[in-house]
Amino acid sequence: MPRGRSPGSNGSSVALVAEGCWGATIERASSISAAGTRMVAGRELTWTDVYGLRPVAMVSENLARELWGSARAAIGKRVRSTEIGPWREVVGVVEDFNFTSLKQTVEPLVISPNPDRNVVLVRLKPGNLSKNIELVKNAYARVAPLYPCDYTFLDQKFDELYRNDLRQQNILSIFSGLAILIACLGLFGLTSFTVAKRTKEIGVRKVLGSSVQNIIVLLSKELLKPVLLATLIAIPVAYGVMHNWLQDFAYKINISWSIFVLAGVMAIFIAFVTVSFQAIKAAIANPVRTLRSE
Image (cartoon, rainbow, N blue to C red; front, side, top):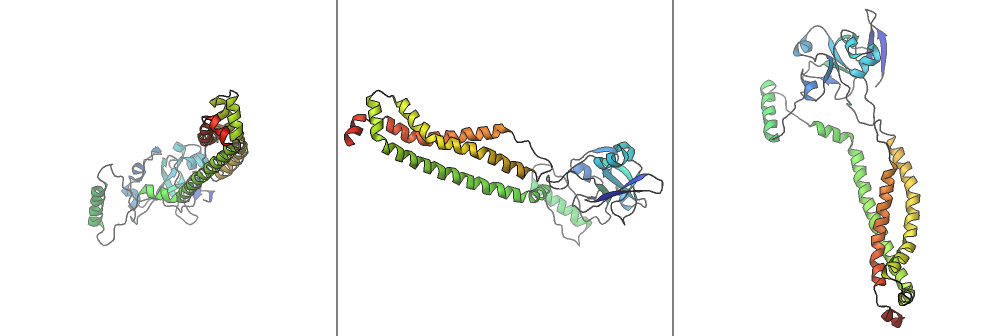
């Protein structure tokens, strides 16, 4: 969003902020309150401002701080939203809010009246949604019967902003589940092969006094070594991929190593459960019958 400064006729600083987002204009006086945003200084726009001869506007708190040092100092200053737009007197300062994706920082914003009245922001109470929508449609029909009433929900707007990220999350979750399932099947097959190959050794160890726990530890330790090695290799790779992905967001979390430690512990636990099934089966087998068959 390009912006700049130029002096007003009274020598005061003014802002040049390009609009161009669905949240950059206001169609009714209560839009700020309906959106759950609070005023920091000054007042909201009124119907008199919409039809009045004096052009006025509200600005965001970060824009007021950048140009005039504080929100209160911005009241009474002049601002315009485009290079060819009219100069407007600042009558209110609204707290900063992100009207785009969280991949972008909160940009300075100029909110000006829109006399076209083609958009209305309505806040509905929780409950009977269909009844509330019908009431809004009836009220709209009384005011503008010649124009259709088309409505969308604000949460749908936000869903559109993050639709690709949510789709990517679902795809990664599905393929991660399939990868874990395939890895468990492969590990189960490797365990079965190892137990079959060492059946005689296991029988001899039991005859010589090895306990069930010792045999389980013996088989599990050998089969879990590749899992541990793969986990150690995967952790720094996953950290790098997640770190690069988070760079697309202006507001992001700090990646904690505890996440990767927990993931590693879970991977080893899943592998241990997979290996233990065949290891326990081999450990509790009758050694006499095992050695006779060998």
